[in-house]
Length: 258
Image 1 (cartoon, rainbow, N blue to C red):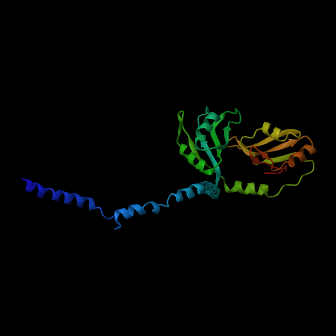
Image 2: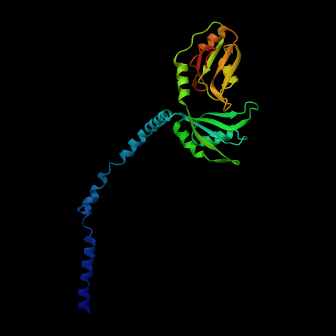
Image 3: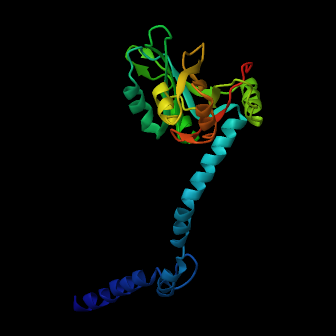
């Protein structure tokens, strides 16, 4: 029995040693001890994310700029969408809260009925970036109350582009007896009160806003009648001054302007 025990013991020991020595080499054929010692220096990869993070803001700005250029090239107004089919009881605060989730809003223009001044279920929204405007299209088909809202990008027609370009190529000369000024590139939210405060150094007789017949909203320009020539000259001298973050175009009014 003792002899059998002595003969049986060496066999398991030899097996154990073999099991320990089996993983001698890694998949590259190198000894495990050497491979382990060489692993740490082989990792310079963490530096790459640092470069990516540094470049991220520039990449985002470039992408936003390209998106705006692409929108203009496709005939859309960059950063602008139109929502229709809203309940007449919807408030501007509710609209801002809903669309503001997609990004900062530059302006919100509610279209109203000319006779009553009540909201007519149509609103124009301008985002600070075209990317946010495109993301807000996810709200197309969104249910508000018992109505489904329609959201789409604002398209600029070629004729309106030509008219706008021609309008600003040269400033018209002052005609005899002129006491009116053309005021353009206005924000959709500008009111008569805002304009009177803007031209506070001039005496204003009246303000005539250009209104879109289809939507009832502002077309982004108006004509201001002044009480005297001095007031008119002061106003024209304010050309390109900012009102609500936009440079305002101010020029002498032409009676036959289309």
